[in-house]
Amino acid sequence: MLFMVRMDVHLPPEMPPNLAQEIKAREKAYSQSLQREGRWPHIWRVVGEYSNYSVFDVAGNDELHDLLSALPLFPYMDIHVTPLAHHPSDIN
Image 1 (cartoon, rainbow, N blue to C red):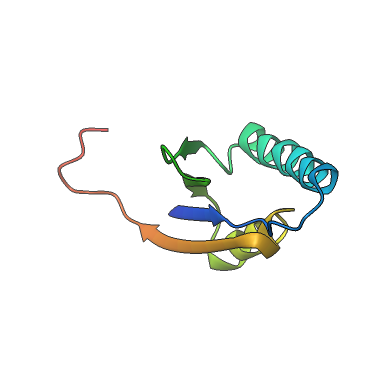
Image 2: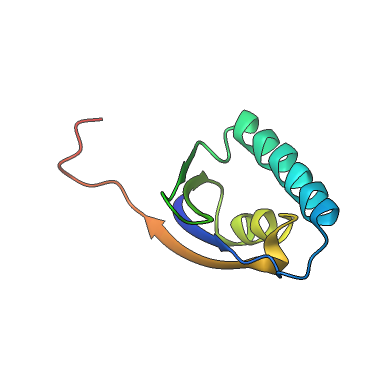
């Protein structure tokens, strides 16, 4: 199943910079692992925001929830999920 996910990150201003960098490094490693596995085939930055739009290709709702809740930045995110279906006019 395909899902489009918008993630908006809100790190607390009082978070120590070294802790923020450590969390971001873990986030990058985890997300790139999922990308290599094909479960996170697309990620785009939202210009001017600490946000992204991503497409996930997973078995279903439970797998997506597990992947998202395991993100190191998850506690600092607002996440909006949109299930996707193939459009009948798509030539692919």
